[in-house]
Length: 401
Image (tube, rainbow, N blue to C red; front, side):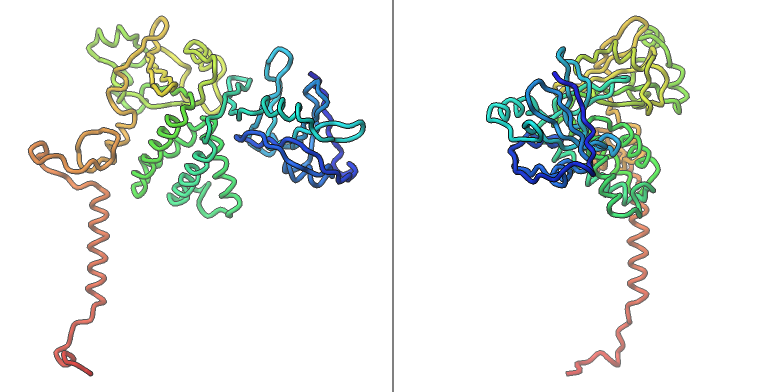
């Protein structure tokens, strides 16, 4: 492969205006054939900015990309690979594949269209592993569904009054919504999850909606079968649970303290790249912490959950190696938050406001904070209506017709 790259002088490139047949490759979409002019303005419009031309293949073809795509935070699109199949660069944003003539861009041949359509056919997402990116095939339909979910999520965050979403210009709001969608598609959702759970605990008015949104995120990943992992560590705010920190699985049971997921908090979640193992996760979260990781180095008593192939598997970090612990799922991972919001004091089963328990099982139903607030609101509205309602006068109680 030819790794040459030309940073085109965008202001000085001549306008030629010839129509050529090329491939256009957009993030999260399959390549498609397009007719495009070779003049500078048309090429810049296609890629969304100043152009950079690279020649990564031995074939006489050019890849025309946005020169500042990465700096502008455009979605990572497709990887470029060396002769050994190793990823050496990633194109950000939409790009074109064109043929070459002696002095300009030209049309692709039918054979070239077939070849490069196949090379770039599968959309990719990229997971950060230490200082390198690992490509993963993007599930079909993930962009559309992530965009829809991100839109609902942005609306919710704006409704809660979150500073970064509330009262900002519409253009900035759309940009933040697009950023949410990218984070969802790439599995880098922990910052979103952390924000929603914090709001669920502190914002009474939108607690249920925030928690429901977390569950919707989980359902999205399950439907799209995007492989992910989560790290759980013993809750620092739980004094009793802290006594169980750094105990081996055997020590835990010898003390009569079986593993209980309610003692844990999720401290990180992310994409699970191909080839990632429990050992490599352990190494990464001891030697190369991600920038947004706030927990301690992965240690004994922590739990790693792998979400892949439609299944969740939990592994206890033991004194030697890992031990699979299906009992970690005996309680809903969000149960502690649900306990703050549950208004029927029924079973914690992943559904807020389950409805009344059967009377024989419920000694006395206590009103929740939300119910009390709603009652006060209803009473205030009733009183207001009574205050403004004019009493009917006997003198006027007759037909005026």
